[in-house]
Length: 409
Image (cartoon, rainbow, N blue to C red; front, side, top):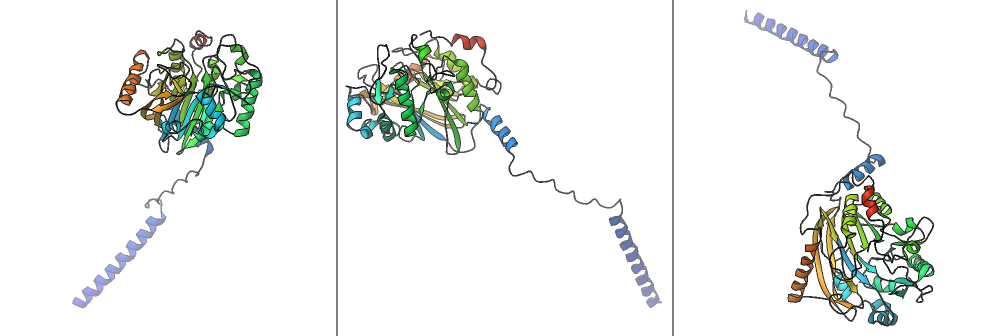
């Protein structure tokens, strides 16, 4: 009986196993079976130019954009020139490589990029067409050697002395720029060249710098301003051109800088043209705005989240008495559009060259520099961004542009 039961159980187990296997086979083959794993979506292409450009533009038009790489340190100095008969002029004639001494490199120490205003026409050492004005400054092309050896990355000639030797002198400057390869902003054979930015990549961050002047003698303004057909200077009175250039570079640059010649001589507060122009430029996408012309120090601080310095004063200049001898360099470290830190390195001009200050003298000079901010529209700490993707991609209001398009100084 027992053996029969065992055989029967074995037969039942075998039949059940066959049924189970058949059922599994049916389910796997049929519509009711477990669904197959979904095929993975196709991988996106490793590069897509249009998508990449969209990302760049959306990032760069974000006022909080911090770039994709590492911080960059910029150091800015004010007015530099080498007039004949001055200590600087003699030093340039003796040895261009040492003309700016040891202190200028010291004040530019640590810079990934440094810049100053070349307050002069650049010629072959002559002045072929001396302009009818109170002060005429010119220097030979060896000035470029002086800047290079002092560690100055680039200079601007968009100022009220850039064409002191007339159209012929300007052509000498343009020839020297081309032959040397040294970046000189703010001059050109036409308006496009004059406003052309200096563009470079440092620590992976894309930098764009534009230069223009808001100071040209009223009787020379038409003759000196670069146009579509006339060589000359980048004029900040051509507000539309300046704003358009800022907006253009904003789309591809991580950090946008504007270096201006502006202000009123010996006036240590901004004049009625400076603050409105700064507002427009920040709204157009400028992250850093610095400038010169007054030959004295003006205040610097934040305009929204951008940084604006209204006057760097003299840097290496023949003014050796107060207040024109107050000097120094502005050190700004930025990551993309974010201003990481700002420092003022104070100096005083002695024998035409800036001498860095230390100890109590430096402390007092920094306190005075901070006090200069009181009569400006900038603040010691960042505020709410003034710029937006709308202000950085649309023309500035016509009434605001018109108010800044004529010389009121």
